[in-house]
Length: 162
Ligand SMILES: [Fe+2]
Image 1 (spheres, helix red, strand yellow):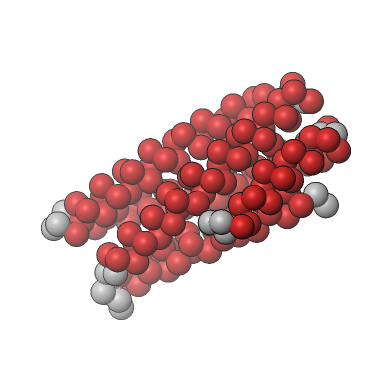
Image 2 (image 1 turned 180 degrees about the vertical axis):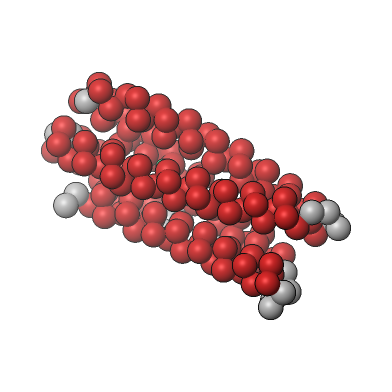
């Protein structure tokens, strides 16, 4: 197992637990058993913006996906989808912040609730595609030199934000 794969899977698990925390809280708010904790939502969105959006996805694009495109041209179709989803994820996060603000200011709870659930499903599906479709292809076709480059890039995550 290459270090970068372990790190990517760990980072995906961290993202998944943040999403689970958000969904657990919104479910309790929906059920009326907890007061909405707007600071919690904001802190979790700040985390997603600071780490997955600014560190994790760009490293996938710039190292893993870039080298895989060179070694396995047939991977282009799935990598195009995933890179587009990296862009879309940033837009969805901005939309979530707007919907959170609207709800807090007296607007629709349902709009935020639905957008949050859709965002979690979008992100889980995205990470599943990376783990089930991209990593196996990368393990087959990348060279040891490629992995050195990718491992170094991902290991650098560990010292700072992660
Ligand atoms: Fe990704």
